[in-house]
Length: 191
Image (tube, rainbow, N blue to C red; front, top):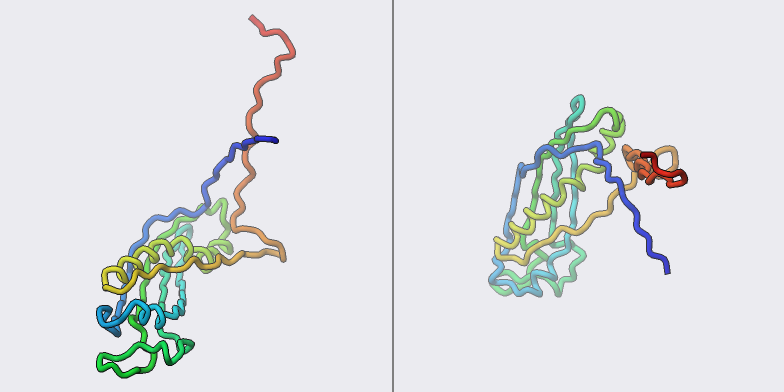
């Protein structure tokens, strides 16, 4: 059995998050949670998440707006799973609520380590995954406070950026610096 350890040289990514704040939260309840069973709520929840990223890029910084919209009550829900209206008659499948949320984030880029083409691609494809934990927290809090079961955003697939038909993460970090080796003790120590 072999036990080895490695020392990792952690290099900072050439992008720094400077700020993030919620820009917009829209929550519209279409039903009263107390009048619905948990099974009815869960049966009508067929999340359809859509995300949009808009960025404004300056010399070495960018402002990104990431918005996320979740529409519930997909037509894929069977009629027998439909939520009943207050009068007790089955209705079309209704979304218990509609949720839209957007966050604004500011990023600073190291121009020596990230060329402008990579900045644009990172803003379009990578920035959402930095902002999404903030959105996830807000979605959970708003739905929990509304009386509905807490909604947790799922983990989303991170796109792999490709260059010249080979996978390459944006702004590859430089190789770890060599670990200093202790001096060899071949010769007697000098006094």
